[in-house]
Image (cartoon, rainbow, N blue to C red; front, side, top):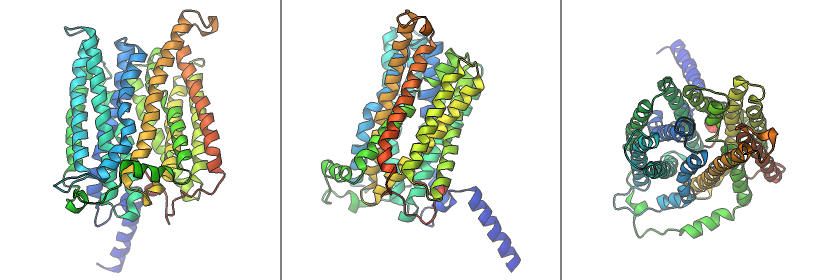
Length: 476
């Protein structure tokens, strides 16, 4: 190879590196092909989230006439397991196994729970639709069980999978690896939303059932590919006589770390502020703006696109030395603007304004997530990766689950009061319940700004000390 050919090869390599920002997460020990294969469990998780918080909840509320309170309760049911993510992470750190595997068993059983929930869900929907013989309460119980299994499987597989990624990745690229895995979650959501929206252009209950059954098979296949030959057997780590911290000791050590309680409070408030509308955005589009099932399902794609744009904006700002908590405050302010757009879509009769609002909710939530996750993952160097990832996931998922349930109940309650005339003639429309929730989210985001203020005023001890940041470097 002559000098000119070498120069051309170097230019092409630089171009590929620029176009594939996560290429520098790969190493000889962890090639990009193996890393992308591992990320498949996040793609399946994104697919399940689109089904639960997008397509199914809209169909159940609008087409099947199930109350938003009941659907919000079912969507929030998986969050019962959310506080256990910290314990799951700790257990996978200290798992006792004769085979030398710590993370694999948790990923496998989590995948089986996801598959089981998706397998049960179509039969529950058949009963809820009235097309099957049997009391309606069996459909409610079946749907609740399906949601519970899917959510529990997601928590278990994600916590162990992210911990496995930190195990097999060299220390200097771990933040990049975790970042790629979280981006793949959004990619899975975006692709799934587009596919589901295309398949549901002409909606029918049979098509929805077929989609859910296909998602169950895809989940099993993707997670099996992700897990295959990833974890190296290490019997020393799983030996029963190895010294281990108790969960209480590990948790006390983590929670006593400087600024950790306030950081977790900020994460909780932001999760509530951005998540209360999760099951209401698509019903709002269908019931208030008269959008089709396909159009409202595409909103999830816009949300995911906005989140990816938010990641890029946050990565650029952090590469320029931005303080992560101030960046989180900016994301919170952008969220306030996003919810204002959604509220104004109805009086202005603007579908475009509603779509822009959905995009901005994803963008602002993405910026907030990058900022808080950047701060959180900096603690992983002083603690086991499993418990740090578990703590973030537990706080975020618990807060989000409670917010989802509360949003549905508030929507139904305020709508009932408005329709019975108890709120006066100015609030006698179905939109009253939706706008009340969106205004409440704006208030909570203002409270989040108050909580993040003291952290933004100081030089953050959690500022990552990477020599290069950018999109491939932000911690997941």
